Image (cartoon, rainbow, N blue to C red; front, side, top):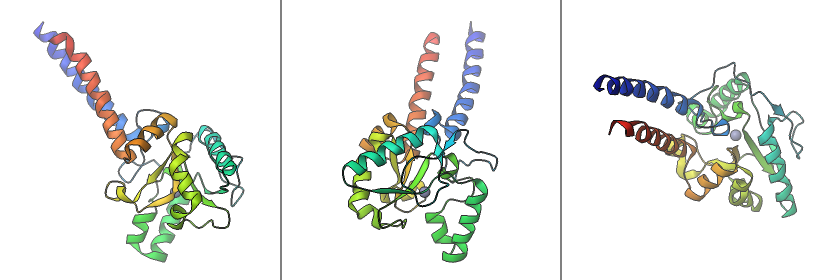
Length: 227
Ligand code: ZN
């Protein structure tokens, strides 16, 4: 019996490290992928179902993953009904495109500014196809003024209802490593977005807590027979 328990514990501990690894790198569900400077995508990753959202955009080639694109269409439509015209500025970006943008930012603004505002290749949510940079009518510039505009404030208060979060809030910088980016919205699905919005926490914290509770629940459940 003791051997059985020991074997069970060994399997559990192996299982735990496997679960933790997967959770940290690819998250708990398809839309909850955590990609940042620590957890990066390979140069080969391209999302499987990129489509062009039917929304106002600055250039024709902007794409997102299908589910996110449909949610974006609803977000833009409802914003429009409230008198806020939004414009899609940048969606999916390949590893190579991100590498070029990051290098250009370093050349133009220096390493510190690049680190605060642009993800290195592999570390960008834009490569996931689940992020969109947005502007407003008459101002497509991606800067802090979007956050102060009525359009930006409407997005901040309502994006979660469509499954999006403001990924880089000013008070998250220490955790995310990025400055305030009111224009960068990230699709995680309505349930997660609503919870994240209500609690006012960065995705890193949310995923960490969720993985711990999942992990804790498994542990409790699995260790019960040994009691
Ligand atoms: Zn962005």
